[in-house]
Structure formats: structure tokens, C-alpha cells
Length: 184
View 1 (cartoon, rainbow, N blue to C red):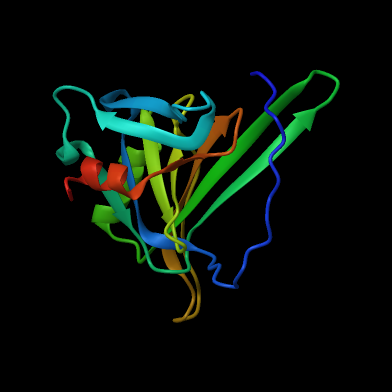
View 2 (view 1 turned 180 degrees about the vertical axis):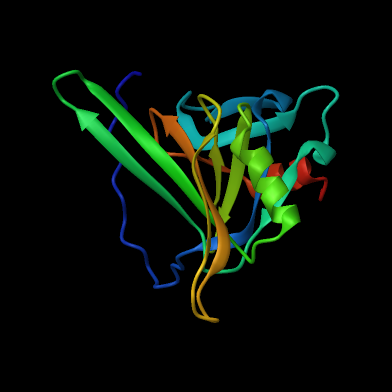
């Protein structure tokens, strides 16, 4: 990957930042999508957004949603840089928690865990939308089920979906998500 010129970051003008995820993520087979990194027509530089479209024969019916309780799930991205080899790699982990174990959730999580051709769209509480699967398929790296001893302990399934990339996750425009979901 070619080096990019440095770009500064201005101080946010207000304190309206909210942590957490929107209570739904969306997934489909990566091979169902045309995935293009958006480029600024004037400068030829990447914008940080990805353009997504259904390939012929696929529609919003091929997008699956996973709903979870608020303040239960998270997306983390951690980069590792090795100066000796000149490499940089990001591990993007989507940790999903689904309250209350039941047969339907078990079947959905089992199918998700075995998927080998996965792309995932994640919306955070600030309304920013991220795409996981830009370079390769997202894979399940951890699955769990637990029920505690006390009545107030968790009874839940957990799954971690991991996306290994050379860059932080790309963003998706709301209009693109609306088109994919058929909400135009």
C-alpha cells in the first residue's frame, strides 16, 4: 500500500459523542456484493467510504439482520505495526451479545459461526456506519453461551466476528445502507 500524506484532526466543537452500537447489525455473503472504495473525482484520493451494491440476482432479501439489546455489543479495532517487517495490520472485532438463550438464536448463531463468505455492516450510536469485509471475509473467532447462578445474572449467547485488514474499517453512507436494505 502506498503511503498517504498526513491529514490533521481538528478538535470536536461539541460534546455530542456517544459510545455504543445501534441495536442491529446486518450481514450477507460477501460474494453477493460489489465492493468499491470510493475515490474523490477531483483528487483521485480515497474518501474513506466504501460503495456497496448488490450483484445481479441478489437483493435486500439476501441481507440478514441481527438485533440485540442496547449497550450490550461493541466494535473494536486494534492495529499492530511491525517496523522490522514494514507491516501494519488491523484486527476489527465485532462482539455481539444476544440476551436469553433459545432455539431460534442458537440456530442463527450456529449458522453465523460457520459462515465462510461474510460481510457485515455495523451502525454506531453516533449514526456512523462501518463495513467489515473490505479485503476478505469476516469470520467468527469466538462463540459462547452462559447462564449465571442468580436470577439477575446473564443468560445469553456471545459471538465475536473478526475482520483482519490493512486499514481501519471503511465507512458506509446512509443512502447506501438504505439502498441495500430496500429503504430507498
